[in-house]
Length: 102
Image (tube, helix red, strand yellow):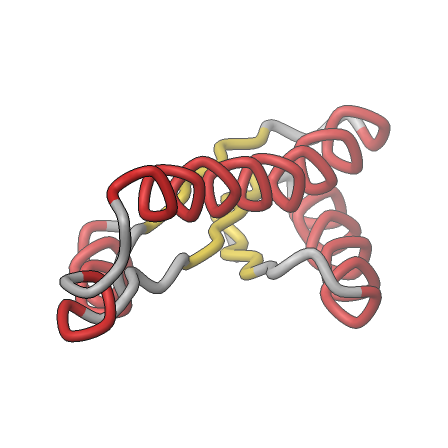
């Protein structure tokens, strides 16, 4: 019935509970889990006035948080014996494209 369960996460406790439910659903139906998190780029108007090292730090921290959030999905899937793919999407508009492709 369900072959690919899309599990969005932002690393919050609420999302961690949703991850557990998504993984359980995938296991029940013999499907896989796709964990996805969306990071929002800094606004161009704000970024233009900031030093480049601050922008680089923002990008690094955003990527680290995304990885941490997705690692929770991957760990839950591994523990349940469910196949898992994780994706960090860097823009809300790109999320729409990602969803249409999957």
